[in-house]
Amino acid sequence: MLERELSPDRDVKLVRLVAGRDEAAFEELVDRHQHSVLNTIHRYVGEYDAAADLAQEVFVIVWNKADRFRGQAKFSTWLYRVVVNQCLQYRRKRRRRPVVLSLDSVDPDRPPEALQVGDGREQADRVAAVRQALARLPDRQRIALVLSHYEGRSYAEVAGIMGTSASSVESLLVRARAALREQLGGLR
Amino acid sequence: MNCIEVRNRLGALLDDEFAPGVRISVDRHLEGCAACRAELDRLARLGAELDLVPGIEPDPFFLTRLRQRVADERTARRRGWWPRAAMLSGVAAGLLLAAFAGLRLGRLAYRAVAPATSGNYLELADLPDGSLYEVSVTVLAGGDNN
Image 1 (cartoon, helix red, strand yellow):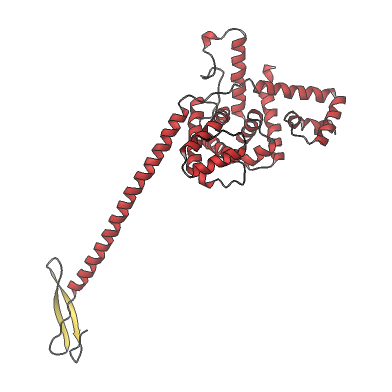
Image 2 (cartoon, rainbow over the protein chains, first blue to last red; image 1 turned 120 degrees about the vertical axis):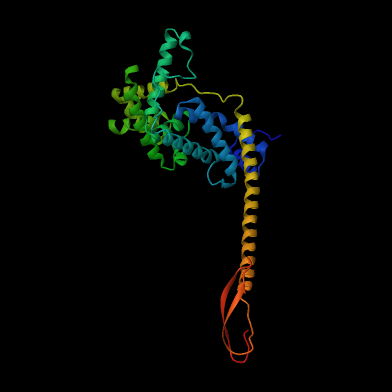
């Protein structure tokens, strides 16, 4: 059984094994990253089933293309480039049906209506409003915000994933936050 | 630093993206500017609202489904190799057969004849299907037709 290490070097070792079709290494790599990959995608696309499918697609790509990882960047940078590409492709396919969640839309994370009372209902409405505001952000602003705010990545890391500069990332975040404040101002 | 410069960088302050020297300048400005402090507070509250969106957990069958997908892809690639190889072999065999038949057809279509005297002769050549067609043969003087 492979030992679990916490360093990024472990990812590099694993992906090289995956390139040699080592299934145990692949499963460990999935185990290390599935939670954050799934959540990143979910916060971008807003739907659980779509997020789960896209996350599966990401890891299938990792399995098929592990031999293309050169090790010049961190594995997580390479992985999240795949994540971002999948999100953007999904968005392009759905362009005629934008992902806009209304306050009444079905939300798998929202308790059933009958169980929401008082503050619970208000909280659920606020969560739905935040999701809707996120869904309305332009693609690049949304990606930058999800990676920076929700995944805790540095501007430099986000820049590496998005193929841009740290100052561009900061600029995207300034605009994203301004847009969100404008949409969510009614909740304050 | 003035208020516009500081407010454009408050997000980076919250994200802890400043080099120590820049941080000191921003902190110094905030100490003396209530408006910028209020703006920082509004940004922090926005962050708290963003944090209301809960994370999700992978369903317990995520890895099982992934294993199946990887296995299906592997099977599909193996299956894809054999039909392609068989098809290419068939095409190659067909081309060889056609080339052979063409060569044979050419031989049957022309038959060199060595008539006794020189001149132009009309020959009727055999085709593989048993039919005949006309071939013009020019016989050179000396009887050598090769």
